[in-house]
Image: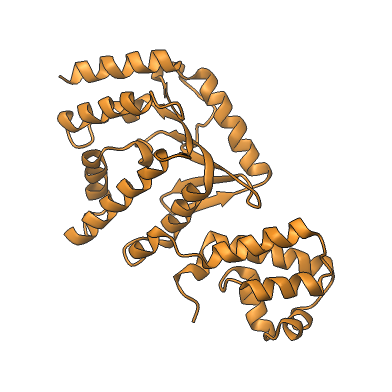
Length: 284
């Protein structure tokens, strides 16, 4: 049986590449299966992302499809290795939905993240107390042990903002998110102070979208865009109560343009710092 990684975004991206490559050569599932020593149903599962292809299978795909381009072969090999790669998050898979594992993997691969938030603050910028208040409100039926694990997971994710090669983060935060007293006034004061502190990092940009702007470029809500190194595309991530959607190509580019327009109408970094300071003082 395929393991937990079998249904990840990584496996789906790899399977999509293999399917498009096979179809472009007008090869049947059986023809590829005979070549890579797999039955047609297994080949179908590989291409749907239910079963990640291993490196030998990827190389065999490339051979039967006549792909000699060295970079193309290296790219698909990398995708196969990533699909089976274990990360620090594997210890959390029993407590975490596969969709969040995809999110964490995108964060781990990203060189730059653009985040627009309207309900809560970005996970990478939350204090422990703020995160705990959110998690307890969102998951009232889970055990105390699971709550602790969720909080630990969120805190570990924030290490992407540290180290020699931290991810570049640009966040536009709707004013309403900052005025919501998550965890109470004391927790929010500490959260606002934390935002002011991290916004001074050279690789972090925090901007406030003031309510006075009125209608804005993203009326349908929050989203994140992940810029990654090759062979991966720019990926847009949209969270909904019914599930999460990952987009690429033109859809991801549309989100990038939307984010640029949000930055244009948001407060400047200097004005944002002043806004956060005033709001923190008001809570005192």
